[in-house]
Image (cartoon, rainbow, N blue to C red; front, side):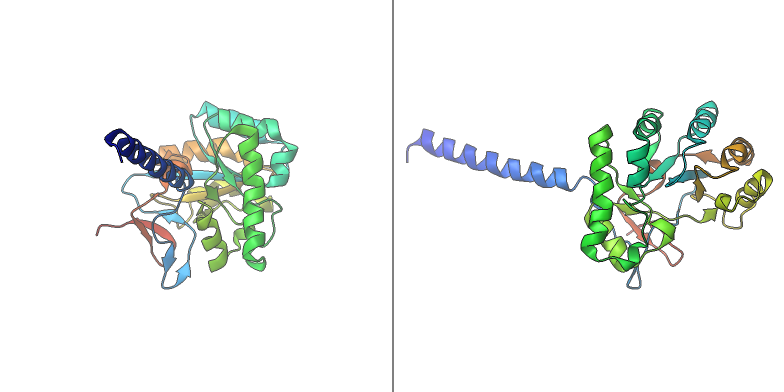
Amino acid sequence: MKVKERILTIAVTLLGVLTILMAVTKDARYSVSASTSYKGRELPIYCVETSEKKIALTFDAAWGNEDTQDILSILEKHNVKVTFFMTGGWVESYPDDVKAILAAGHDLGNHSENHKNMSQLSASEIESELMTVHNRVKELTGYEMFLFRPPYGDYDNEVISTASAKGYFSVQWDVDSLDWKDYGTDTIVDTVCCHKNLGNGSIILCHNGAKYTAKALETMIITLKDAGYSFVPLSELILTDNFYMNHEGRQCVRTH
């Protein structure tokens, strides 16, 4: 083989290898590279180990939409970025609000297509529940979601493993506002701001479409900021690699 032909062959081979590597890298952009298990049980992220007084405020969007614009206005007023977990039905019903949430700098998270109990589904059904809404949001906004919250907080090993295989970090919460119970504005504020689990790295659960959430939101934000906390979206709170889970679902930094 002539030298030029040999060089050309090597170049073509290297180009092929590079193409494969680029494809693998693209597919692995959202891969969960660290262990999500504790003693054989797969766990979602309930909170995050951090020395900083930062917390994440999250909203599950599955039903109503009456207060979404009010919530976004309050968040903008106080320069707070959060994470919205949306069902496929909600995305389909309110596409303009999905775009507005993203345009305002908030995370878009996956709350499944049909809000089913995920632990009762097969692996293929779980994947369908995840990827149907994932693809709808990607087509609508170009955004690749990588945060997943199981409906009703219901999960098992297969749910977390299947989500991980599709590039998703599964996220629960350690502070529940109980806003869906409609107890009132003051109750929501007290439940969150005086919660026994509230601390560095906490994840707070709220809902849009609940009766008093928007009315309680500003006071909640001010109270928590006065206590020294700063708000970050989940994409800035969670660890994406080099971590392990402890018994309470706290995502911890791996030091060795």
